[in-house]
Length: 126
Image (cartoon, rainbow, N blue to C red; front, side):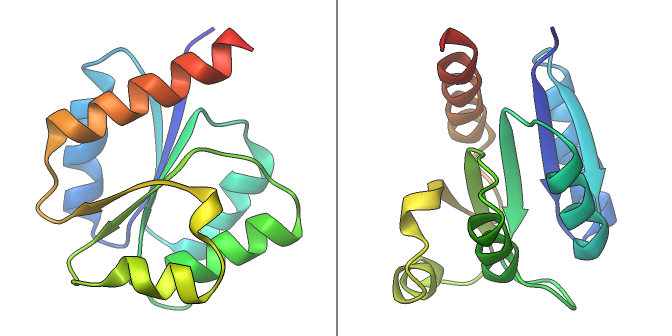
């Protein structure tokens, strides 16, 4: 079974570039550039990892994590942000336990890919 990754980021070009890099590692990748579409995908799919932009229109990354917690949706979530101190926001919201890592934009692809591989391996080893 192919390991599935979901990227939710309102920057279409960035989303596509990131998806291509992850596909080159052998993962199946779905992208959502609309956070509401991303929410539907989270609820309908079983993803090995979810890469989530912090700041998006309509729903922020924190809003989506709150929804995941309420609906008891599990996932290895990695937060992307161009803003400093975003980790503090998630800590204040009590969401740190849902997050596998924070990555500043521009993203260090080597570190992100390592986290994705580890998350997918842990899930498939269960």
